[in-house]
Image (tube, rainbow, N blue to C red; front, side):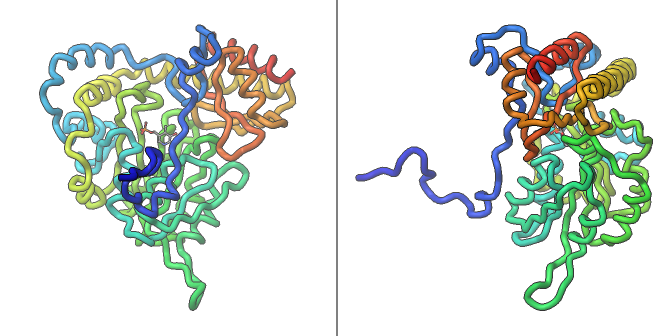
Length: 375
Ligand SMILES: *Cc1c(COP(=O)(O)O)cnc(C)c1O
Protein backbone atom coordinates (compact mmCIF):
# COMPACT_ATOMS: atom_id res chain seq x y z
CA UNK A 1 0.00 0.00 0.00
CA UNK A 2 1.44 3.36 -1.07
CA UNK A 3 1.73 5.85 1.75
CA UNK A 4 1.85 9.61 1.21
CA UNK A 5 5.14 11.50 1.61
CA UNK A 6 6.05 12.72 5.10
CA UNK A 7 5.80 16.32 3.96
CA UNK A 8 2.05 16.07 3.37
CA UNK A 9 -0.59 16.01 6.10
CA UNK A 10 -2.62 12.78 5.98
CA UNK A 11 -5.79 14.79 5.38
CA UNK A 12 -5.93 18.35 3.99
CA UNK A 13 -5.59 21.19 6.50
CA UNK A 14 -8.29 23.89 6.71
CA UNK A 15 -8.21 26.00 3.55
CA UNK A 16 -8.11 29.29 5.52
CA UNK A 17 -4.76 28.31 7.02
CA UNK A 18 -3.00 28.82 3.71
CA UNK A 19 -3.08 32.54 4.61
CA UNK A 20 -1.56 32.07 8.06
CA UNK A 21 2.18 32.73 8.17
CA UNK A 22 4.54 31.09 10.57
CA UNK A 23 5.99 33.66 12.97
CA UNK A 24 9.71 34.26 12.51
CA UNK A 25 11.19 35.29 15.85
CA UNK A 26 14.42 37.22 16.42
CA UNK A 27 17.41 34.98 15.82
CA UNK A 28 18.15 33.07 19.05
CA UNK A 29 21.54 33.58 20.75
CA UNK A 30 22.30 29.84 20.73
CA UNK A 31 21.70 29.63 17.00
CA UNK A 32 24.29 32.35 16.33
CA UNK A 33 26.72 30.65 18.71
CA UNK A 34 26.30 27.38 16.83
CA UNK A 35 26.37 28.79 13.30
CA UNK A 36 29.19 31.31 13.67
CA UNK A 37 31.18 29.71 16.47
CA UNK A 38 30.87 32.89 18.54
CA UNK A 39 30.42 32.86 22.29
CA UNK A 40 29.78 36.45 23.32
CA UNK A 41 26.53 37.40 21.67
CA UNK A 42 24.39 40.49 22.18
CA UNK A 43 20.75 40.07 21.19
CA UNK A 44 18.92 43.29 20.40
CA UNK A 45 16.26 41.66 18.27
CA UNK A 46 13.16 40.89 20.33
CA UNK A 47 12.53 44.00 22.45
CA UNK A 48 13.33 42.06 25.62
CA UNK A 49 14.27 43.76 28.89
CA UNK A 50 18.09 43.84 28.95
CA UNK A 51 18.04 44.06 32.77
CA UNK A 52 16.27 40.70 32.97
CA UNK A 53 13.28 40.10 35.23
CA UNK A 54 12.80 41.89 38.54
CA UNK A 55 14.75 40.28 41.41
CA UNK A 56 11.43 40.13 43.27
CA UNK A 57 9.92 38.05 40.46
CA UNK A 58 12.85 35.63 40.63
CA UNK A 59 12.41 35.14 44.37
CA UNK A 60 8.68 34.53 43.87
CA UNK A 61 9.35 31.98 41.12
CA UNK A 62 11.86 30.06 43.24
CA UNK A 63 9.28 29.63 45.92
CA UNK A 64 6.53 28.87 43.44
CA UNK A 65 8.58 26.04 41.93
CA UNK A 66 7.66 23.87 44.90
CA UNK A 67 3.97 24.15 44.13
CA UNK A 68 3.79 23.38 40.44
CA UNK A 69 2.29 19.93 41.03
CA UNK A 70 -0.98 21.76 41.64
CA UNK A 71 -3.01 23.28 38.85
CA UNK A 72 -2.93 27.06 38.88
CA UNK A 73 -6.02 29.14 39.52
CA UNK A 74 -7.64 29.37 36.14
CA UNK A 75 -8.19 33.13 35.95
CA UNK A 76 -5.19 34.34 38.03
CA UNK A 77 -7.49 36.21 40.47
CA UNK A 78 -4.72 37.69 42.66
CA UNK A 79 -3.02 39.21 39.66
CA UNK A 80 -6.37 40.29 38.25
CA UNK A 81 -7.11 42.16 41.48
CA UNK A 82 -3.69 43.79 41.60
CA UNK A 83 -3.91 44.92 37.99
CA UNK A 84 -7.44 46.25 38.42
CA UNK A 85 -6.34 48.27 41.42
CA UNK A 86 -3.32 49.60 39.59
CA UNK A 87 -5.30 50.55 36.50
CA UNK A 88 -8.32 51.93 38.37
CA UNK A 89 -10.86 49.58 36.82
CA UNK A 90 -13.17 46.96 38.39
CA UNK A 91 -11.63 43.46 38.54
CA UNK A 92 -13.85 41.87 35.87
CA UNK A 93 -12.45 44.38 33.37
CA UNK A 94 -9.11 42.56 33.43
CA UNK A 95 -8.63 39.35 31.42
CA UNK A 96 -5.30 37.59 31.80
CA UNK A 97 -3.80 35.36 29.15
CA UNK A 98 -0.80 33.30 28.10
CA UNK A 99 0.92 36.37 26.74
CA UNK A 100 -1.10 39.17 25.21
CA UNK A 101 -0.75 37.12 22.05
CA UNK A 102 -3.25 34.65 23.48
CA UNK A 103 -5.67 37.46 24.30
CA UNK A 104 -5.46 38.78 20.73
CA UNK A 105 -6.02 35.28 19.32
CA UNK A 106 -8.93 34.55 21.65
CA UNK A 107 -10.62 37.77 20.59
CA UNK A 108 -10.55 36.55 16.99
CA UNK A 109 -11.58 33.00 17.96
CA UNK A 110 -14.53 34.44 19.91
CA UNK A 111 -15.78 37.17 17.63
CA UNK A 112 -14.89 36.25 14.05
CA UNK A 113 -17.11 34.13 11.83
CA UNK A 114 -15.70 32.92 8.50
CA UNK A 115 -15.84 35.81 6.03
CA UNK A 116 -16.11 38.56 8.68
CA UNK A 117 -13.91 41.54 7.92
CA UNK A 118 -10.94 42.41 10.12
CA UNK A 119 -8.82 45.53 9.55
CA UNK A 120 -5.14 45.48 10.48
CA UNK A 121 -2.27 47.95 10.05
CA UNK A 122 0.48 47.08 7.56
CA UNK A 123 4.05 46.91 8.96
CA UNK A 124 2.94 46.00 12.44
CA UNK A 125 2.64 42.94 14.68
CA UNK A 126 1.97 39.84 12.52
CA UNK A 127 -0.34 38.20 15.09
CA UNK A 128 -3.22 40.47 14.07
CA UNK A 129 -3.52 39.16 10.51
CA UNK A 130 -2.59 35.62 11.51
CA UNK A 131 -5.18 35.39 14.28
CA UNK A 132 -7.84 36.78 11.95
CA UNK A 133 -6.87 34.57 9.02
CA UNK A 134 -6.92 31.50 11.23
CA UNK A 135 -10.64 32.22 11.71
CA UNK A 136 -11.10 32.58 7.94
CA UNK A 137 -11.65 36.32 8.20
CA UNK A 138 -11.43 38.64 5.26
CA UNK A 139 -8.43 40.73 6.28
CA UNK A 140 -7.91 44.30 5.02
CA UNK A 141 -4.35 45.48 5.59
CA UNK A 142 -3.96 49.26 5.62
CA UNK A 143 -0.41 50.51 5.01
CA UNK A 144 1.21 52.87 7.49
CA UNK A 145 1.46 56.56 6.73
CA UNK A 146 4.74 58.21 7.75
CA UNK A 147 5.49 55.07 9.80
CA UNK A 148 2.35 55.54 11.92
CA UNK A 149 -1.18 54.11 11.86
CA UNK A 150 -3.19 55.76 9.09
CA UNK A 151 -6.27 56.14 11.26
CA UNK A 152 -8.33 57.87 8.58
CA UNK A 153 -7.80 55.15 6.00
CA UNK A 154 -8.27 52.49 8.65
CA UNK A 155 -11.59 54.03 9.72
CA UNK A 156 -12.70 54.12 6.09
CA UNK A 157 -11.76 50.44 5.73
CA UNK A 158 -13.70 49.58 8.89
CA UNK A 159 -16.85 51.36 7.76
CA UNK A 160 -16.84 49.75 4.30
CA UNK A 161 -19.73 50.73 2.05
CA UNK A 162 -20.31 50.92 -1.68
CA UNK A 163 -23.20 49.45 -3.60
CA UNK A 164 -24.18 46.27 -5.42
CA UNK A 165 -21.54 43.63 -6.05
CA UNK A 166 -18.78 46.03 -4.98
CA UNK A 167 -20.36 46.62 -1.55
CA UNK A 168 -17.98 46.04 1.35
CA UNK A 169 -19.46 44.95 4.68
CA UNK A 170 -18.38 46.86 7.80
CA UNK A 171 -15.51 45.26 9.72
CA UNK A 172 -16.19 43.38 12.94
CA UNK A 173 -12.79 43.93 14.50
CA UNK A 174 -9.88 46.33 14.00
CA UNK A 175 -6.41 46.06 15.48
CA UNK A 176 -4.29 49.10 16.33
CA UNK A 177 -0.79 49.01 17.78
CA UNK A 178 0.34 51.87 20.02
CA UNK A 179 3.31 52.38 20.20
CA UNK A 180 3.57 50.54 16.91
CA UNK A 181 6.01 47.68 16.58
CA UNK A 182 8.37 47.96 14.62
CA UNK A 183 8.18 51.73 14.08
CA UNK A 184 7.68 53.05 17.63
CA UNK A 185 5.09 55.63 16.59
CA UNK A 186 1.95 56.69 18.49
CA UNK A 187 -1.27 58.39 17.47
CA UNK A 188 -2.77 61.19 19.55
CA UNK A 189 -6.00 61.34 21.51
CA UNK A 190 -7.75 63.70 19.10
CA UNK A 191 -7.15 61.41 16.08
CA UNK A 192 -8.14 58.37 18.08
CA UNK A 193 -11.41 59.94 19.25
CA UNK A 194 -12.18 60.90 15.67
CA UNK A 195 -11.43 57.30 14.66
CA UNK A 196 -13.73 55.88 17.36
CA UNK A 197 -16.55 58.24 16.42
CA UNK A 198 -16.16 57.40 12.76
CA UNK A 199 -16.11 53.58 13.11
CA UNK A 200 -19.14 53.48 15.41
CA UNK A 201 -20.04 51.00 18.13
CA UNK A 202 -20.43 47.76 16.17
CA UNK A 203 -16.77 47.02 15.69
CA UNK A 204 -14.38 45.78 18.35
CA UNK A 205 -11.46 48.24 18.49
CA UNK A 206 -8.41 46.44 19.90
CA UNK A 207 -5.48 48.66 20.88
CA UNK A 208 -2.30 46.67 21.54
CA UNK A 209 -0.28 48.64 24.10
CA UNK A 210 2.57 46.11 24.55
CA UNK A 211 5.05 49.02 24.80
CA UNK A 212 2.86 51.44 26.75
CA UNK A 213 5.28 51.81 29.67
CA UNK A 214 8.01 53.16 27.38
CA UNK A 215 5.71 55.74 25.82
CA UNK A 216 6.22 59.26 27.13
CA UNK A 217 3.34 60.79 25.17
CA UNK A 218 1.07 60.69 28.22
CA UNK A 219 -1.92 59.12 26.48
CA UNK A 220 -3.37 55.63 26.77
CA UNK A 221 -6.45 54.23 25.06
CA UNK A 222 -7.46 53.01 28.51
CA UNK A 223 -8.64 56.52 29.37
CA UNK A 224 -11.47 56.16 26.83
CA UNK A 225 -12.78 52.87 28.22
CA UNK A 226 -15.54 54.59 30.25
CA UNK A 227 -16.92 56.07 27.02
CA UNK A 228 -16.52 53.17 24.58
CA UNK A 229 -17.95 49.71 25.31
CA UNK A 230 -16.39 48.37 22.10
CA UNK A 231 -12.83 49.27 23.10
CA UNK A 232 -10.23 46.68 24.19
CA UNK A 233 -6.69 47.47 25.36
CA UNK A 234 -4.01 44.77 25.66
CA UNK A 235 -0.72 44.91 27.56
CA UNK A 236 2.00 42.46 28.50
CA UNK A 237 4.55 41.40 31.09
CA UNK A 238 6.91 40.38 28.27
CA UNK A 239 8.56 43.72 27.61
CA UNK A 240 9.05 46.16 30.48
CA UNK A 241 8.64 43.46 33.15
CA UNK A 242 11.14 41.14 31.46
CA UNK A 243 8.93 38.05 31.69
CA UNK A 244 8.65 37.11 27.99
CA UNK A 245 9.76 33.55 28.69
CA UNK A 246 6.88 32.98 31.11
CA UNK A 247 4.10 33.98 28.72
CA UNK A 248 1.76 36.33 30.53
CA UNK A 249 -0.20 39.34 29.33
CA UNK A 250 -3.65 40.84 29.73
CA UNK A 251 -6.48 42.79 28.24
CA UNK A 252 -8.71 45.49 29.73
CA UNK A 253 -12.30 45.96 28.51
CA UNK A 254 -15.89 45.85 29.68
CA UNK A 255 -16.62 42.46 31.31
CA UNK A 256 -19.17 41.65 28.59
CA UNK A 257 -16.32 41.65 26.06
CA UNK A 258 -14.55 38.89 27.99
CA UNK A 259 -17.40 36.64 29.12
CA UNK A 260 -17.38 34.37 26.06
CA UNK A 261 -13.58 34.24 26.03
CA UNK A 262 -13.67 32.32 29.30
CA UNK A 263 -15.46 29.48 27.51
CA UNK A 264 -13.24 29.56 24.44
CA UNK A 265 -9.91 29.56 26.28
CA UNK A 266 -8.23 26.50 27.69
CA UNK A 267 -8.64 26.57 31.47
CA UNK A 268 -4.98 26.56 32.54
CA UNK A 269 -2.99 28.63 30.06
CA UNK A 270 -1.72 31.07 32.70
CA UNK A 271 0.82 28.95 34.55
CA UNK A 272 1.46 29.32 38.28
CA UNK A 273 5.04 30.57 37.96
CA UNK A 274 3.86 33.28 35.58
CA UNK A 275 1.06 34.34 37.93
CA UNK A 276 3.30 34.80 40.97
CA UNK A 277 6.16 36.33 38.99
CA UNK A 278 3.88 38.87 37.36
CA UNK A 279 2.36 39.79 40.72
CA UNK A 280 5.82 40.30 42.23
CA UNK A 281 7.08 42.23 39.20
CA UNK A 282 4.14 44.58 39.48
CA UNK A 283 5.33 45.60 42.97
CA UNK A 284 8.87 46.39 41.80
CA UNK A 285 8.68 50.05 40.84
CA UNK A 286 12.47 50.47 40.98
CA UNK A 287 13.05 47.80 38.32
CA UNK A 288 10.46 49.44 36.11
CA UNK A 289 11.89 52.94 36.54
CA UNK A 290 15.40 51.70 35.88
CA UNK A 291 14.23 50.00 32.69
CA UNK A 292 12.50 53.16 31.50
CA UNK A 293 15.55 55.33 32.22
CA UNK A 294 17.86 52.90 30.43
CA UNK A 295 15.51 52.80 27.45
CA UNK A 296 15.38 56.60 27.16
CA UNK A 297 19.15 56.79 27.33
CA UNK A 298 19.55 54.03 24.72
CA UNK A 299 17.11 55.64 22.31
CA UNK A 300 18.92 58.98 22.58
CA UNK A 301 22.22 57.25 21.98
CA UNK A 302 20.91 55.62 18.79
CA UNK A 303 19.53 58.98 17.60
CA UNK A 304 22.90 60.66 18.14
CA UNK A 305 24.73 57.85 16.37
CA UNK A 306 22.36 58.01 13.40
CA UNK A 307 22.73 61.79 13.21
CA UNK A 308 26.47 61.40 13.15
CA UNK A 309 26.25 58.72 10.43
CA UNK A 310 23.69 60.77 8.45
CA UNK A 311 21.10 58.01 8.72
CA UNK A 312 17.45 58.63 9.41
CA UNK A 313 15.44 56.86 12.10
CA UNK A 314 11.89 56.88 13.37
CA UNK A 315 11.71 58.62 16.79
CA UNK A 316 10.43 55.88 19.05
CA UNK A 317 8.02 55.54 21.97
CA UNK A 318 9.06 51.90 22.44
CA UNK A 319 12.18 50.09 23.65
CA UNK A 320 13.50 49.84 20.11
CA UNK A 321 14.40 52.14 17.22
CA UNK A 322 13.79 51.58 13.52
CA UNK A 323 16.79 52.78 11.53
CA UNK A 324 16.91 53.46 7.79
CA UNK A 325 20.36 52.17 6.87
CA UNK A 326 20.05 53.69 3.37
CA UNK A 327 21.10 50.46 1.66
CA UNK A 328 19.82 46.87 1.64
CA UNK A 329 19.47 46.01 5.33
CA UNK A 330 20.11 42.26 5.23
CA UNK A 331 23.84 42.52 4.40
CA UNK A 332 24.24 45.01 7.27
CA UNK A 333 22.38 42.61 9.55
CA UNK A 334 24.64 39.73 8.43
CA UNK A 335 27.80 41.75 9.00
CA UNK A 336 26.59 42.67 12.50
CA UNK A 337 25.89 38.99 13.22
CA UNK A 338 29.53 38.23 12.46
CA UNK A 339 30.37 40.76 15.19
CA UNK A 340 28.06 38.87 17.53
CA UNK A 341 25.27 41.45 17.53
CA UNK A 342 21.76 40.33 16.58
CA UNK A 343 19.33 43.01 15.37
CA UNK A 344 16.18 42.58 13.27
CA UNK A 345 15.71 43.12 9.54
CA UNK A 346 12.44 42.34 7.76
CA UNK A 347 8.95 43.70 8.41
CA UNK A 348 8.68 44.09 4.64
CA UNK A 349 11.10 47.03 4.86
CA UNK A 350 14.14 46.59 2.60
CA UNK A 351 16.34 49.31 4.08
CA UNK A 352 15.46 49.22 7.75
CA UNK A 353 16.75 47.49 10.84
CA UNK A 354 14.96 47.44 14.18
CA UNK A 355 17.31 47.67 17.14
CA UNK A 356 16.11 46.86 20.66
CA UNK A 357 17.60 48.95 23.47
CA UNK A 358 20.21 47.05 25.49
CA UNK A 359 22.35 47.75 28.54
CA UNK A 360 25.11 50.36 28.21
CA UNK A 361 27.73 47.73 27.43
CA UNK A 362 25.39 46.05 24.93
CA UNK A 363 24.87 49.43 23.25
CA UNK A 364 28.66 49.83 23.11
CA UNK A 365 28.85 46.51 21.29
CA UNK A 366 26.01 47.57 19.01
CA UNK A 367 27.73 50.80 18.12
CA UNK A 368 31.01 49.10 17.22
CA UNK A 369 29.29 46.40 15.15
CA UNK A 370 27.01 48.92 13.42
CA UNK A 371 29.88 51.22 12.43
CA UNK A 372 31.90 48.27 11.13
CA UNK A 373 28.95 46.79 9.24
CA UNK A 374 28.33 50.07 7.44
CA UNK A 375 31.93 50.34 6.21
C1 LIG B 1 5.93 41.67 22.03
C2 LIG B 1 4.60 42.12 21.57
C3 LIG B 1 3.45 41.61 22.14
C4 LIG B 1 3.54 40.77 23.36
O1 LIG B 1 3.33 39.51 23.18
P1 LIG B 1 3.22 38.55 24.44
O2 LIG B 1 2.40 37.46 23.87
O3 LIG B 1 2.53 39.28 25.54
O4 LIG B 1 4.61 38.15 24.79
C5 LIG B 1 2.22 42.06 21.71
N1 LIG B 1 2.15 42.99 20.76
C6 LIG B 1 3.23 43.52 20.20
C7 LIG B 1 3.11 44.59 19.21
C8 LIG B 1 4.50 43.09 20.59
O5 LIG B 1 5.56 43.60 20.01
